[in-house]
Length: 128
Image 1 (tube, rainbow, N blue to C red):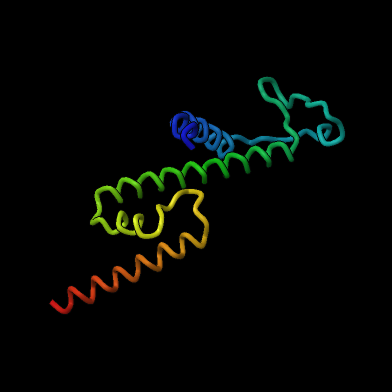
Image 2: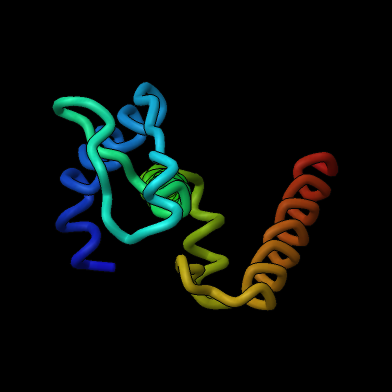
């Protein structure tokens, strides 16, 4: 994760470039590509790519984009946690800090305890 954080800006730039390319380009596979492993040019300056390769590349860009988006959202949530009321720090000390690799059981436990604390605080405030 540390290596990804170090290269995140480059990864974002590359991901946007590839995503824009796949959105705007009209890739085509020549009929001879599916029958042989030799790639033939469609016109000057372009190259025919087998359809399964193009689909794999598009899928890879989509998955990478989702990963980058999740990482960005995680960092935003981390920033909000540090400027918040202290509830998340309290939950971290009671349960365990959540991470990108936390199990579903850890997530459910964390949320349940958080909801319990919020209900308790709401009841205490309504009694005042």
